[in-house]
Length: 228
Image 1: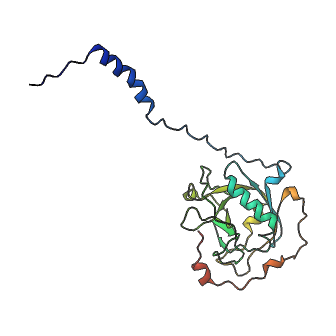
Image 2 (image 1 turned 180 degrees about the vertical axis):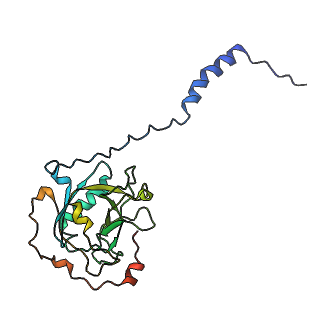
Image 3 (image 1 turned 90 degrees about the vertical axis):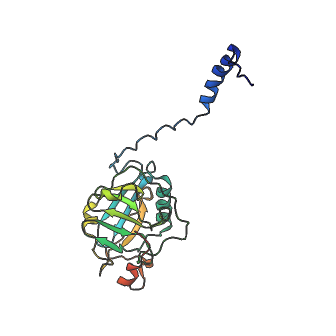
């Protein structure tokens, strides 16, 4: 017959000593990321290297405060493309009344983008308010590239699904005047996109960027768009 030996005092002591060491191996929850502030500086003289200026063919200049603390990689992409002149001549190809105006595709169909690689999503807690600027993408969350949209009215169903990277701080009345349609019959163009730090004057009235000469856009092309 086998007898079970009682736990000695020494063994009990060893068990108690080992207990804290075991507890240390448990996963400790990571501290929550600090909440992002939704406050945007509207002073055009502050941080001009993070202000995107869009001079539109309908007249008027739109100023967008870029927010690196919200989405650093997306802001860097927008700035890089603007400095390359990528957006000059590009139309607003998808403009839905009461919703948003989308641009950033040099083909004007919603199917194009830049030659740079797609971006990893930087979804954040910022709401899609009037004047919010956010990245367009396909069904793949990590497919944002060059296309972005400006929100006419709050659309909170987009929150946490699209990367918010800026907000209009001046010229929202010119955004409101962008021609509607998918595509519009006479689309509004970005004649010039620059950073405020470049101190470029608006183009002369009636100017259309050379890159604006694109083939006619059909509704069928837009219905096959890969951007949301």
